[in-house]
Length: 412
Image 1 (spheres, rainbow, N blue to C red):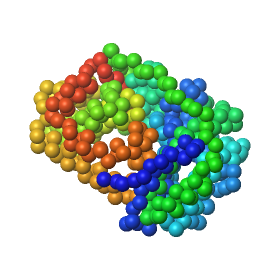
Image 2: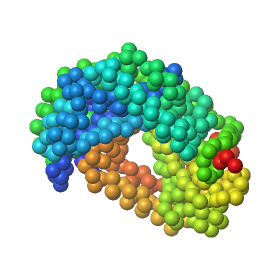
Image 3: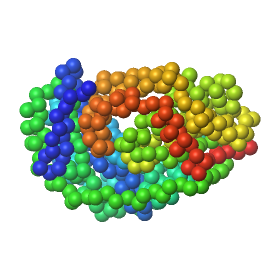
Image 4: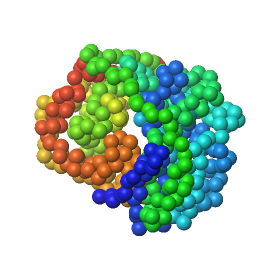
């Protein structure tokens, strides 16, 4: 159980303070309520571009990293479909320096032509190296538009088209910043061994005067229910075939998410999981195989992917996957397997509470998802899952009409 205090500044910035007396390190996490789902379909990749631009200098701080390193700190960031997260750690005695740094770039970026050009090139090169010129790099670029027809999840966080970043103008960049990178669209979480009253005063000092942005109501197109199977087959210069199957599943914040996530663990969490044990070790149909849930804030995907062993036809590999999924639909999970899976999840949740940085990040993300308090309820939600709810969820998920399948063939 993580104790914390939560309040909101006049400009709409949500603040979460967690006191941890076991560490001399303070963690500062700023989660912005903007991801690739908020982009214009004609200008994708902007959320990811800003992950880079936010380190390119702000109004009073031309070099973010140098200032942080001089204070003994480390930092990083990530962007996904639903949010953008910036996190850093510093010795607690230098906490005010961290708040100064984060507040200055929240208030106003430098918006220099030089910074935009540098980061534009970085992002474009990342797109090429990680998605276009790497084996299997374009798998999700192919799968997402197959599974999603109208929802913005149909493009990757990196963007839909290189041209969208290549042709981004300064006016478009500024507009994106002032729409989304505002205090009323952010959650500031601070964790460490500090005096609450002192930190509250520092938060007000550095963030209280930042102007709020215009009111924003997210209105995304709802993805219609998939009513027929979808299939795509491509050929690429890769060392082995791959198969990927994607099933539409529930949003992250609903009760159905927990049995959905547990099904993925039953299938592939650890060497004793079903897919590894049956399809890799016993039947030797796959060299590797895994399953996972995207965990998206809106309706996500349950994905099974793997590389069949040499000589195994993709159709046979596909049939073997379907057989395992149908087994979950027909036969309830045994108590021992259910208990093992719950114990694995409880262990992972326990480890997530050990690092002050992880606690700060998780509290901020859960506040954007629903409410920070929900983070303390996660283990209870998983513990409440039954064999019956797992079977019912599997029967709902693993239908042919709900599946998008990608055959990714290696060139002969």
